[in-house]
Length: 158
Image 1: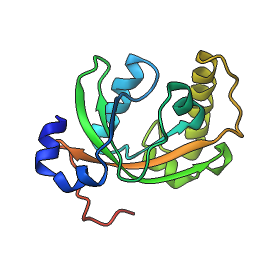
Image 2: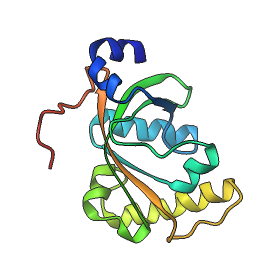
Image 3: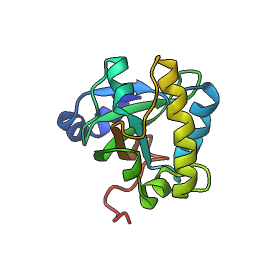
Image 4: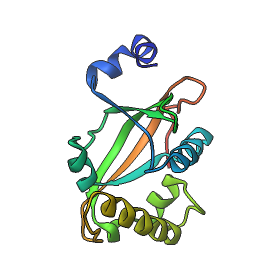
């Protein structure tokens, strides 16, 4: 998948040659569920704790970086490119970000409820206790491969 993308978009790869291979969420069910929301076009944002990047030994993404999103079996399905990043705490999440994340009913209220549950669970899995004061990476992205699912990056986004 990466070689196909690279052959068609060499300039994007030259600008950001690094990529990660991963899936959304912390379970097979969540990986597939969130991937389907991306495939539908509804999900174009994600949020992750800085502490989770650190615990895996990963760097925080940068604008222009790529990741290959896999399904729960590990099969690559999409290439995503980071278009916007910011760091903030839990209280800094806003309604437009919650809507861009596209999960549940898309409201800030459901975003807060579900992310509290999720980050409490993933922090506990690494032996920590989650706090709303922790740094969060708020990331917006575009799907850039395969062409059937790729966003039109020339179109204005709200």
